[in-house]
Length: 498
Ligand code: SF4
Image (cartoon, rainbow, N blue to C red; front, side, top):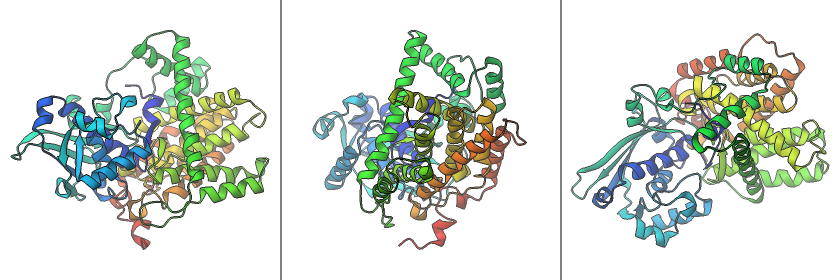
C-alpha cells in the first residue's frame, strides 16, 4: 500500500492518537463489522473490554476508556464534535447505560442526536467490571492491544476481536494481520493503486526527485493523484483540486485548533493543575510584537505549538500530525513557513495556501518514511517516534518552502531526527501534558533550526535520513518499556503528581 498524506494527517480528538483515536476507531469498527447483523446486535447484552500493555498503563490519563465507550456507540473520532463528546459522556454517567452501535449506521455527517440514536442502537448497561486492565500483559504483535467481546444474557460469546492501535490513530485487527499472514506492518500493506513514484526509503525518494527534476512535494502530489484517480476516477485536474481542498482542510483544522485554545482560560483537565498559557502569551505577543517582526519568530512558534497541544490535552479537535501528542509541531512550523518564508509578509491568501500545501505534502512524504521503516508510536519506540518524527517532517516541509533542494530537504529531516534520538515517553500521570506540551515547542524550534542548517549547506551530508530512521527504530527496540508510554519511568515517576 502507498501511504497517503490523508492516512498520516487526520482529524481526530485529543489527547492521544494511539490511546484515544485508535481505541475509538477500533470500538467503532467492532460494532460496525462484528455486530453488523440485527441478530448479533439484538443478542448482545454486554461488551467486555480487555486492555493490554500501554493502553492499560496510561489509559486513564489518555481517555482510552471513554474513547472506547464512544466508539462502541459508533461515533467517529474524525467527525464527533467536542461538545458531543461532553454531552454523550454526561448522558452515560447519568443513565449508567450506552447506546451500542447507535451511530455506526449513520454516515459521519448524519450522526444523530441522543433521541435518534436511542432508536437506532441497542441499550446496554455501562459496568466498571466490563473493563479489564492488563498493563503487564504485552501482546506479541503490539503493546497497544485490546480485545472486545460481545456477550449475551447468559454470558455466551456473540463476537470477539483483537485490535492493535499502532500509532497515529492507525488500527489493525488480528484478522487483518492473520489474513496477511504476517506482521502488522505487512498487514497494513494491502494492495493499492500503482503510483508513479513508489518509495519507502529516503534514498529511493531522492532518486525519484533527481530523475524527474521534481521537488519532494510534487513527487508526493503525483502519488496522491494516482491514488485519487484509482479510487474516484475523473481527470488529473479534478484530482489535484480535490487533493488541494483536502490538504487545505487539514490546514484549516490546525488553524481552528490553535484559535480555539487561545480562547480557553484556566487549567487543563486531569488533576495535574497545569495552567493554560496560550491565551496570556497571545495577549502579550500582540503587545510586544504587533508587527510580527522576524525578531519574535521563536516566541510565535512556541505559542502555536503550546496552543495546539493545550487544545489536544483538553480533548479538543486536532490533526494527528502524525500523532496527537506531537500535534503542535507541524502547525507551529507551518506558521513560520507561512509568516516568515520568502515573501510571506506581503503575499496574499492564495500564495499562503500554496505554501501550506507544499509544506504539508513534503512533511507527509517524510512521514511515510517513518511509518514504513520505523514507527510513529510512542508505545513502540518512545517519544522519538512521535515528537522526533513530527520535528523531522516539519523540518523537511519548511526546508522545501524556503527554497531547499530535495537533498537539502532530506538533510533537514535527518538533522531534526538525529537530535531527537533517544527521546523517551514519560508523561506525568499518563496525561499528555507534561512534558508533552513544551516538548512540542522545543521540537518545533529545533525543526526550524534544522531547516536553516540544511539550507546553509549544499545537501551533501555524512549521515543519511534512512540511517537515522533505522537508528531511531533500533534505539526504540533497546529502550526499556518504562519509557514507552507506560508512565512507569522518567518524569512520570520522579515528579509528584500534585
Ligand atoms: S512524552 Fe511524547 S510520546 Fe509520550 S505522550 Fe507525550 S508526546 Fe506522546
